[in-house]
Image 1 (cartoon, one colour):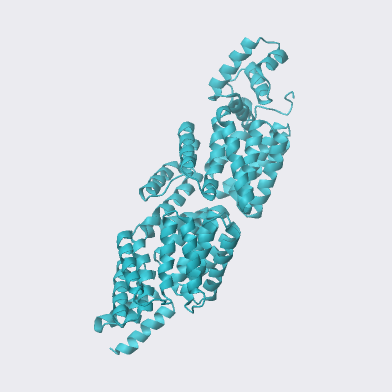
Image 2 (tube, rainbow, N blue to C red; image 1 turned 45 degrees about the vertical axis):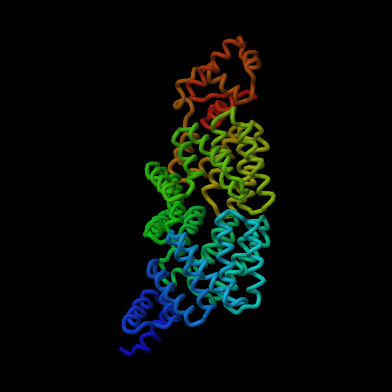
Length: 552
């Protein structure tokens, strides 16, 4: 074997991102004669991109040691950075910390070494994991000063990514997004190593999703898909995490079969021993898809898997409890999740579900739902993302509809529907359409209600959202056939309850005693399985008991 030529072919394969070939060629050359440190580093990158975590760790240790013994401190520190990352992906956080300490001791032997900035990136990441945003920002700013004049492309892009994430974590969203965009410019220029490219894609897309910056997230997700398609052998941990982010965007965009396929691939990939600490995110996305499609048994198991891998299963699990009729469990779960969450953007992820669940509980939690909607409005106003504004308008519209302020509700709901359509999020737009239909029905406009509900049903059918289809079918069915348990007098009473009448007013209008009306109300609550006048009114609107000719 021509050893030098074989090593050259391995280097070319790395440059061409042919990871399987690079790994095999460099492994064969290394077996013949030990590779020099720079080629061992390339060998490690190929192993990393193939998802061979243990091999990547062993090779990076070897490269670090060779560089350090040769006095190449900067190159050794660069290897230490990727070694600590690889160990963390494998769940070996203690070893990752030990190697960071070792790298710091080496860095102290050459003060001012440019690659010391890699250790600052690791320090900032530790602050991020520990929930210390101010310390992270201080570290990121020191990093930016140290790395400002350096020519290492990976280091420059990683610095912009770290500073952007730190700014966002401290509420400086616009400045943070500008830094993240700067990192993505370096990615799209193609000047970075593959492992750095994968890392930055994951961080930027994940941050944009957390901020509900869906347009940015979608744009970068499409670029990521093209990059991944160009190197089908890329199966490393970053590919799995990138898949998790992409699943969420595919779900929002209505490509549910593709989302399910990607979610299953991510679950398989991230439970193979390399990247398990983020596997919970993959199972959560899979659970959400099962829930929306009405596959409740599968959803239950996927939420269990989510928890097994250390991720919170809320708000999805609470919504599953709600759709399966366990309102008390749903309410308890969403209250618990909100009680232990303080960061505004993470609360924004929970608040829409809280509004839906609390309104379903009835009159006793209506004020709590209104407060949740108001909080969401405040977060949307502070951050300004279109998706947040849509969520806030949708939540406020639902609250106003439950309160009987139908005109206000309609204005809010139509704005929410417009924003969701603008973002091309069909499921949420259709859910808003159902609420608009109910508002039209409450105003006596049954014809418009029918159009809105039928339009929403068609979207749900196309998506495969079986529970949502079933709900619309209940709403558009024949009320008389579906509610024979209510007597004619009880129907009169429930319709007046839906119009906001008190027992005293109902008694006067129907020429009954208040005691008789109270008995009818109690019977209605029992037959409809509700516990409040608000819930009875909501049931009347949803199930067509309030007709166009109902007296106002």
